[in-house]
Amino acid sequence: MKRTVTLLLVILSCSQPVKSLNNNIDNELQELESVLVSRPAIEVQKRVRIDSLNHLAAVTNGAYEIYRDLYEEYRSYNYDTALIFVKFMEREATAEQMPEVQLCRAFVYLSGGLFKEAFDILDKWHSTDSTLLIDYYITRTRLMWDLADHAGGEIGEAYNAEGLRLNRQLYTYLSPADTARYWYCLAVHDLREANYQRSIERCLLSLSATQPSVHYRAMTASTLAYIYRLTGNNEAALHYNIDAAICDIRSSTYETVAMRNIAELLFEAGETTEADRYIHLAMQDAQRYHARHRQVSIAQSLPIIEQQMLSRIQWQQQLAWGLLTVVALLLVAGIVGIIVLSRKNKAVHNARHTIDRMNRSLLEANKLKEQMLSTLLVGQSQYLNAVAQYQQDVRQNAANRRWSELMSIPKRADARLQRTQLDRQLDTMLLNLYPTFVEDINALLRSAEPIVLKKDELLNAQLRIFALIRLGITQNEVIAEILDYSINTVYSYKTRVIAQSDLSPEAFYAALMQIPSFSKQT
Image 1 (cartoon, rainbow, N blue to C red):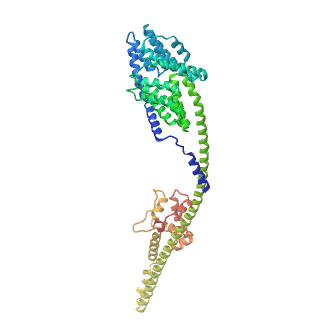
Image 2 (image 1 turned 45 degrees about the horizontal axis):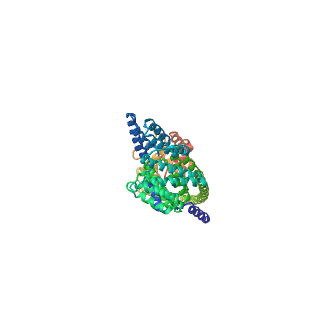
Image 3 (image 1 turned 90 degrees about the horizontal axis):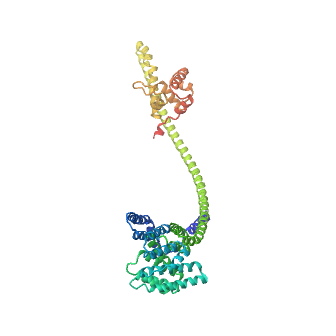
């Protein structure tokens, strides 16, 4: 038993999860969960804006600007719908607006993983508008770096170099007044040149810029997280990925990598259950946006996390079986112990019951002895007094020669009166032993045929007979002798009373013997 308890303690200690995250990360994950809970409400607000713009577009001629606003709502929200509104923009656009339309189309293709289509558009794109040129260089730089990440090797290095060249050209159109975007573009350039420390500093400058947009904050936080992960600081990487994910949710952005990165970092920290939850959320977001390349990258991590999750579940199942076995053994031991104790308790209870029954029997026997002795002594005393009085009356009348008085003495010595007094004493004794005897006998009879006593009558002949049977005197001859009845009279009274009951004779006598004595009532 001691070894079983020790085994149970060991298993329970092994089953406790290992907390590998500090309190700050735990609090940030709780904040992320809180924002995820509010996501439906954020979606409702976005749908209200979209519905308002759709209604406005339906009643407005030349709705290019409205379609551009709808494109902005969908560009990081849903790939297919964003592309639809690009087509609507193209339908309403003037020649001067076409470069902007082409940039929007290229961005949608890039976000959806259609790199060739995006490249074909950007390779032919031309405009002298400085605002559009900023978007062009940002979009084409991102295209080169996405291609570099996917290609790898020498081809990837060539794409990376082209991205650096384009990013440097971007600086000629940005100014420090354009702080958030300015510092972010510099930070990304430093990152691509592997100057991680300066990239971190410039990302922090972008985050501290005046009123950065939620979307830019998400991109900057995601970049910081990427740098910290490259440099081995996974705790900081997780912190900024959580920040980026919160901003993505608040801006209804589904074209994102933060959720996937959170899942991978949690997986590396041993938080398999949470990692599995967030990798599935990341896949749902990618599917919601229809970003094919995001789905492919997530699909590479998903089986690894799910395999680990499956292994953990299998281990938990084995642990559960082990615990179940231990609990079953303890349960069996407990049941055996309960059975043994129950039997011992039952034996003790039976012994006590037997003792109580014997004590009641002894008490009843003592009471019966006292009652019978008292009755016997009173009867004997009355008998002796009557004989003495009889003798005295005979002597006095004979001595005085009062022959008429002498002849009347036998008449005064009435045997019937003596019998009545004896019955009264017997009734008193029996009712002292069985106080509720009359009610209990009537309870055995049909309600319409109870035994009714006369005035001042304690028991009648029938009740007296059954009271003696309850006392244990069952022979008809003995009962007849005690009560001065004939045997036929005893038999007749018994038969008549039993006939008044719905019980069989055997059941009637069994119930009769259960009528409580004075000892059971007390």
